[in-house]
Image (cartoon, rainbow, N blue to C red; front, side, top):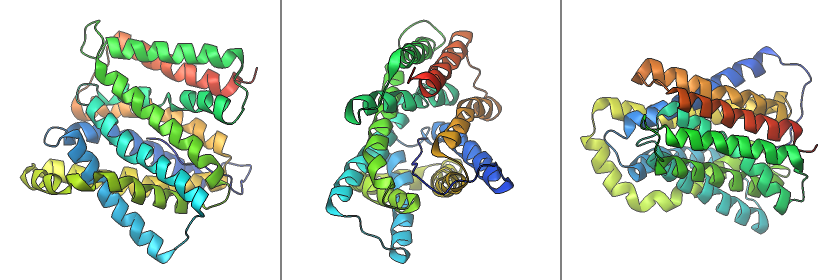
Length: 298
């Protein structure tokens, strides 16, 4: 999962509330990669995206009814474009990719998003990147290539890994678009608008999704409910709580815990064992992200 971040009042220490919020966020976002794999046994990628995010969009609409705050025209356009990228495009690409990419490797690929964000910000916002930024980018993308090559246990490219990389790119573009808005509006309000607007392109798939959900096994329906409530609704709230206690950069560093947690959950729940090449690729992907974030201005 990607994160919506903004400037907030920050405490220096990591208190119990912030720690609990971070742990809950990591576990729920990591588990979503595994639950998606379960749901794809009965639903198409578009149907799963619709079941998850149209429902979440309704919850967001309910929140906005009680905390109504309409952005200005410029901010609304930014939010609208970011929402379509972050919800509809991201979800369909990720779900399609996870048809053959296990939960752990998929989460490692998605967490290259900060690399894309840094690259885009270099050109769009004039931020410095530096030689270490390019080194980290090369390492991270090299890791993704290894994951893609080892996806089916053999050394052959799996195009679904490229689709998940596309999901990470969509998330990065959305993050850059939202950055100015988050300085002017509360993170929860922006998130609600993103969930609501981002679900709109999925509405045409609602009839087919209802039929698919009705015919799906109980485990799939429970899994969809879990995706809507825990990784989507609750985890966004706990992430916002964490951001009130910590700087955005410090909080984001904790998200490096998502891929290994997803790998562990995938092993326990689905018996997914990463190959040696895939595991090396995952380590490279996260190492590259760390280099980009920590040393890109050098």
